Each structure stands twice: as structure tokens, then as C-alpha cells.
Length: 78
Image 1 (cartoon, rainbow, N blue to C red):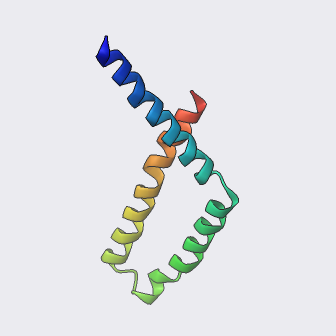
Image 2 (image 1 turned 90 degrees about the horizontal axis):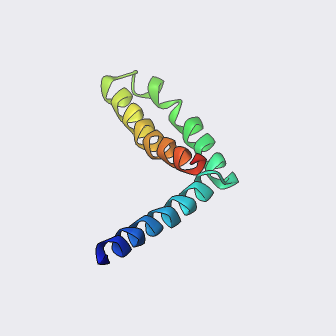
């Protein structure tokens, strides 16, 4: 019985964290920040000669940002 309460506690904490993350990621500030990142990052390709390292860094950054955002969006839909 005690583990059920503990599991509920973890579930509640996750829900609160997910709700806060969704609110932050859906904010105007997050939109502006993402636009600024693209505007600053777009010239990096030509500056670094479209190197494999530049592409790897940019692709990794976008995946790191996209992965939790997709899960957060799915959580908010459930």
C-alpha cells in the first residue's frame, strides 16, 4: 500500500514538472528565443565552411530540443 502512495507521489511530481515545462515552452519568450537561435545559428554554416562538425553540433542541438518537446506535447494532450 505504501508503494502505491509513493508511486502516486512520483506521478504527481512528474505531472507538475511537465505542466511547468509545457507552460514555459509554449510561452512568447520561448518562441523569441527559438527564433534568435535560428537567426544566430543560420550563418554558422557558411562561416565554418559547412563542416561536418558544424552540422553535427546543429543537428544534435535540435534533437536535444525536439525530443523533450515532443514528449511534453504528448503529455499535455493526454
